[in-house]
Image (tube, rainbow, N blue to C red; front, side):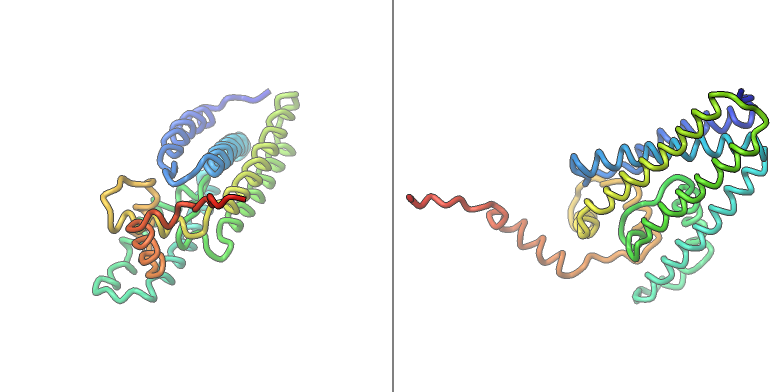
Length: 248
C-alpha cells in the first residue's frame, strides 16, 4: 500500500492548485467547440499523468525528484531560448541586442521552461518544425520510463499499485492522442489572426501565452494576413455564401 510521504502530499496539493491555475492560463478564446474539447481533455490527461507519475517516483527517490525535474526544465529552457534567438535573426529593431541577454533567458525559464513539465503552447514559433510532436514524444517516453521505474522499484505489492500503473498509462495515451488531434485540427493561421487583433484592435487577450510569446519572440503580423483580414472586415459580405435563387 502507498505510504503518503509528506513530500508526496505537498507535491499533490501544490500540483492540484497549479493545474487549476494553469488550465485557466492556457485557455484560448480562439478555440472552437471541437478544438476546445480536444484541448481540455488532452491537457487534463497530461496534467493528471504527470502529477501522478512524479508523485510515485518521489516515493522511490525522495528529494532527488527535484533534480530530475530541474534537468528537464533546463533542457527545455535552452531549447526555447535557441528557438527565440533564431526568431530574432530577422529582427532589425534597435533593442535587438537586449532580447539576447539574461533577461530573456530568465523570462523563458519561467514562461516556458518550468511549464514544460506539463505544457507546450501550440502557437507561433513553438508549433513549427513538428515541435509539439517532439514535446509529446518526450512526455510519453518520460512517463513510460518513470512509471516502469516506480513499478519495479516499489517496496509494496497491492492492487492500488496496479491501478496507478494503468491510470498513468491510460492518461498518457489519452493525452497523446487528444493533443495530437488538437494540433492537427487547429488552423495554421489562427495565431496570426489573433496577433493581428492584438496589434490593431482593442480586443481582450485571447490567452496569457499570447502575451508571453509576444514578449519573448520576434512576433510580426504577416503582411498577407493583415491585408486579407482588412479586406474581409471592411467587406463582410465577401464571407457570406450566396444562395442561388434561380428557378429550376
